[in-house]
Image 1 (tube, rainbow, N blue to C red):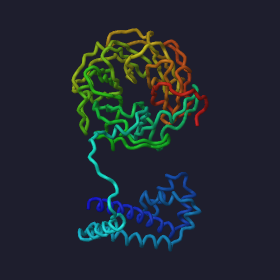
Image 2 (cartoon, one colour):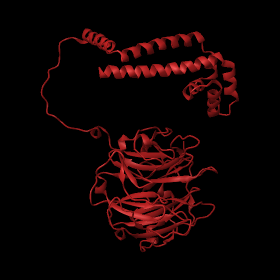
Image 3 (cartoon, rainbow, N blue to C red):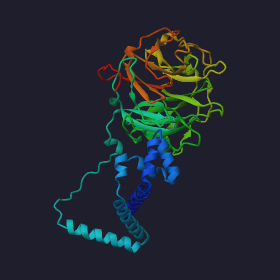
Image 4 (cartoon, rainbow, N blue to C red):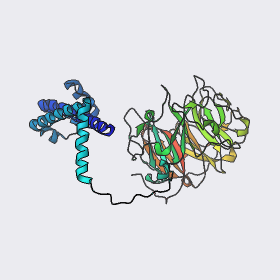
Length: 460
C-alpha cells in the first residue's frame, strides 16, 4: 500500500507540474506576438524571464519553460494540442487525488495490479532455494576508492569530480571550467580526498560536521553542484571554512585550527569520533574573529601561519598543547594593524612553501628558509607583495612531484606541475601561474600528487 501511495503521489506531483507549465504555454500562445517581442528585445535570458513573469504574472518555472523553446517552436505551438493535453492532465490529477483520498479506491488499484502480476508471472518456481551463509557488507564496500576533487562555491554549492577529469597543463595556461556559477556566485574552495575518507567540515564559527566523500553528489566539470545546506545542518550565517580528509579517529592525530586574527588551536581527532546531525563545537571563536583553516597533524610537525601582507611565522606544534573542543586556543602569530591570516601549513615533508597571490602570481621558497621562532612571533617575509601581484590568498607545502590546481572567482581552473614553478627566495614576487581576466582573482589553491603524463596547452 505504501509503495502504491508513494507512486501515486509522485505521478500527481509530475502531472501538476506539467499542468502548471501548460497553463503558462496557453498564456504565451494567446499573446504570442507580445511574448516574441519581449524575448527579442531582452538583453539576456534573466531579463526575458523577469519581463515575462511581470507582464503575464507567470511563475519562474512557467517563464523558463517558454524561454527553453526556440522561437520557431514557440510560434508553431498548436492551441488545440495544448488544450487537449491540459484537459487530459486535469482528469488524471482528479483521478490520482481520488485514489489518495479514498482507501477503498487505493485498495482497488492494488487488487488490479496484483491480479495483473498473477496473470503474468504465476508459474511454478524454477529455482531451488538453499540456505546461504550470511555476509555483511556496507554501501562503502560497493564503491571504488579513487581521488576526487571536491568543489565549493561562495553561495554554498558542493560537488565532487574525479581528479582524472582535469588534464595537466603548462605554467601560464588558461585553464578549464571547474564549476558553472551564476553571476552573483563564484567558486570559493577546492579540496582533494578519497571516496572512502570522511570529510570534516569546519565552519567559520568553529563548528564541525561530517560527511563521507561518496555522499557528496558527483557532477561534471561544468555542473553547479548541490547546496551544501542540504547535506549539512549549518546554522544561520555560518559558512564552511576548512575541510580535512580523515580515515579514522584516534588519539595520535590532531585537528589544528587557525583563525583570521592569528589564534591557533589543537584538538585530538578522537574528540570528533561521535558525529551529530547538527554538528559539534570544534573551537570557541570570538564574535569578531572567524576560523579560516584546519589541518590534520601527528603532534610533532612545524606549523607556518601566513598573512595577507606576506608575513610567515613558523613554530613547533609542540608549542601548542592539545585542548578540548570547547577551548578557544592560543596566540599563533602577532599581526600588524589591518593584517590577517590567510593560510596555515603543517610541515610534513622536505619540500618548499608555495605562496600564491590574488592576481595569479606565485612562487616556491625552500621550507628551510623559514627559521623556527617562538609561537606568537611576527614572523618573516614570505613574498614581496606589490600592486602587480596583489595580496597573498593561499599557501601550500609542495615538492617537485606534486601538481597544483588553481581556481578563480570566475570559475577558471588550471592544473599544472610544480616542476614548472621554480624555487625562489622569500623576498621575491614570483612568476605568473595563471592568466586571469582583469576582474578575475585567484580564490583558492589545491595540491595533488602527479599521476599522468604532462600535456601542455591552453585548456579546453
